[in-house]
Length: 125
Image 1 (tube, rainbow, N blue to C red):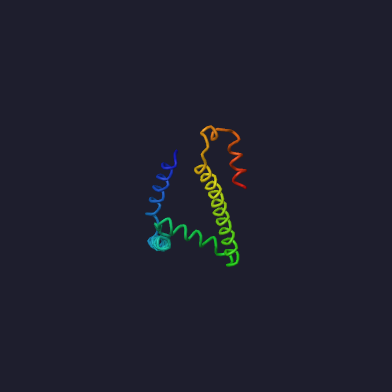
Image 2: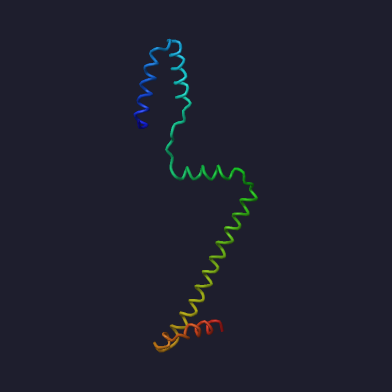
């Protein structure tokens, strides 16, 4: 017997027993059902941003302002360091590119294995 068949049989049995109940019991059951339906939570459809905001609000209620400021400072420090590193790397590449463009090197020099090491050593001077 599968679950649907069992549920169908249980519903039939309960419906048959309902007719045998006294009217006062039936009215109390009806009132209890109406109260339960009134208290039932309704599913509310909300956007992702609202759900994300409520998630953040629920999980940050125990934090103090000092903890939030420390975390924010840490995040800003990491972002600043990553920006600084990228800027430094771009500046190094800029020096190398300008040296290559300003120099009259033969094509064979670019394919030489030691050329990259020479570029780095000349860029550091």
